[in-house]
Length: 140
Image (tube, rainbow, N blue to C red; front, top):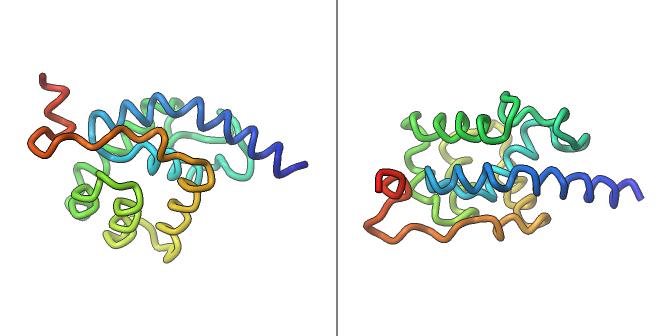
C-alpha cells in the first residue's frame, strides 16, 4: 500500500516537472529523463514526495532549478565529456559519473534505474540533427 501511494505521488511530481525538464533539454540537449531522475534522487523527492519536499536543485520552481542545474553542467569544463553523450540518457548518466559529478560509485546506476522504473525516456526529445545543436535552435 505505501509503495503504491509513493509511486502515485511520485508520478504526480514527475508530471509536474516534465515541462521544465523538456524546456531545459530543448535549450541544452541534456536528456529530460536524467534531469528528472537527478531531481528525484538528489533533492528529496524520495521518500517524501511533493512540491514542498523537492527544492528543484535548491530553487523554488522546477523551471528555475533546472535552468540553474543545466547552466552549471554547461559552464564547468569537467562535464564537457558528458555533454558529448547527451543524445542518450544512459550514456549521459555514465559519462556524468565518469566526470566526477557524484562521489557515489552507484550514482549512474541509480539514475538509470529511476529512468527505467518510471519510464522517463518517454519525456526525452529526439536528438538534434548532426549540424544543428540544441542551442542553435534558440537563436533561430
